[in-house]
Length: 232
Image 1 (tube, rainbow, N blue to C red):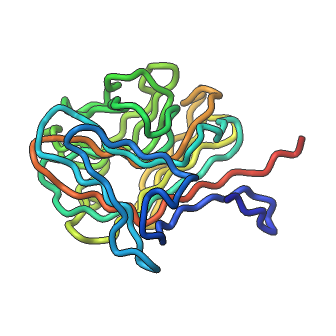
Image 2: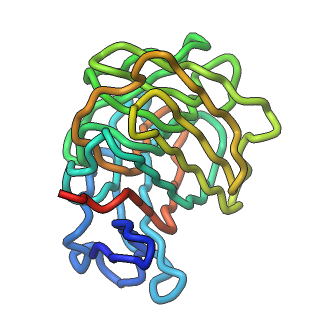
């Protein structure tokens, strides 16, 4: 549930401390053919596992908050802490998108060493890893009304490691012209634009993982979102 902090912020976090997905009505989960998911570890070390099959058709497993109600036009922040069982041939996106985890749609691709839109036109921004790219690094990306507005590859020193905690996060300013991206608490990229980078639409923070050529597990340890509380 949302928490009204002393700083007047709306904060929401899912820590997956239960034993069954059904005990988490505040999240939405997507699982298509070839993708299974479950709570693993449980208790204080609970994680939500997206278990992605070895096919190469971009079927998606995803977990998000259960409503698209984080409206761009105020400062929006999110982060997710994840663990990967394999680095080889996988693809995932952590950030905000204009859909909850109920559709089998690719948000972004980077197969040609440039971020392009996936199969579903979007307003979205976040951090992408696409092992189909020649440069197998993280990408900071954004799209506004079906047009890519940010396409930045990060250096190899930020690349993920197997079975190692990885915290990815992003922020968009109230005027939607500035974005920051974070990995393990470090600001890895900031952009200040003269035009808006995303439309003033309703968004939702989450983690999306896609089937590529190798099966892998993506464990989500937490999802966190934060925004100012309305003054109206």
